[in-house]
Length: 111
Length: 114
Image (cartoon, rainbow over all chains, first blue to last red; front, side, top):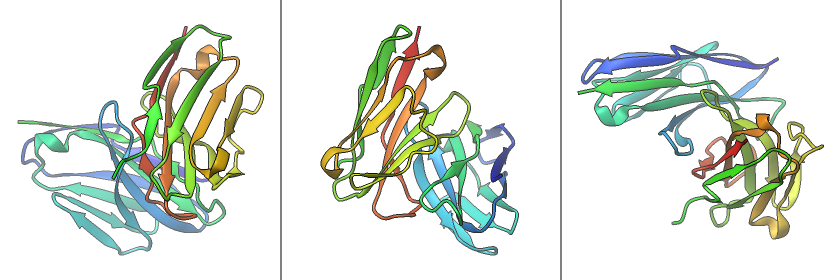
C-alpha cells in the first residue's frame, strides 16, 4: 500500500533559522511528488512538482529536493509569513490523477 | 482570474440531517476533485471527475454520499443522512489536465455535525 509520511509533525523556528522538512514515501511507480502550502482556514496552494530523483526546484526561500525514497523541503532564512502547514503528496503509477497526501508539517516562524 | 469557489464556507447541522456543498471550478478546468480533510490530516480524495464523468469514486461512501457534475462545470456533493464522524472540511479542487498534479483548491466547506 502506498504511504506518505511527513516529519516532523510541527516545527517552531526563529526568523532566519533555516531548517528542513522531510517527506518519505513508499509507492509503486512514482509519477510525481508535490509540495503544497496550506494556511489556516484555506485550501492547499501548489508549490512544486518533482518527477525524478536528483531533481530540485526553488521558489524564494523554499527549495525542494527528491531522492528515490524521500523529499526534503528546505526553508532558508524563514520569515514569519512562511508560517503554514506544508503538505507533501505523491502520484503513483497505478492511480493516475489521484494525489495521496501526507499529514503535513506545521511550521511556525517567530520574529 | 477567479479561483475555485465553494459554498457554504461553514455549515452546522444535527446528525441525520442532509447537507449539500457546491463548487464552481476555474474556468476551462475539465478535472474536478472533492477531497475530505480531517483536523491535523492531509486531504483524502472522495471523487474525481473528468468533465461530467466520475472516473474515480472508489473512496466515496456511497451509502450516504453522492455527487454530481452536471454539464461538466459546477459540482455538488451531498451527504444524507449526516453522521457525527462526517465533521470535517470538504475541499473542492480543479486542474487543467488528467493526471496533472497541480491542483487549485477552494477554501473549503467546514461541516460540523452535532
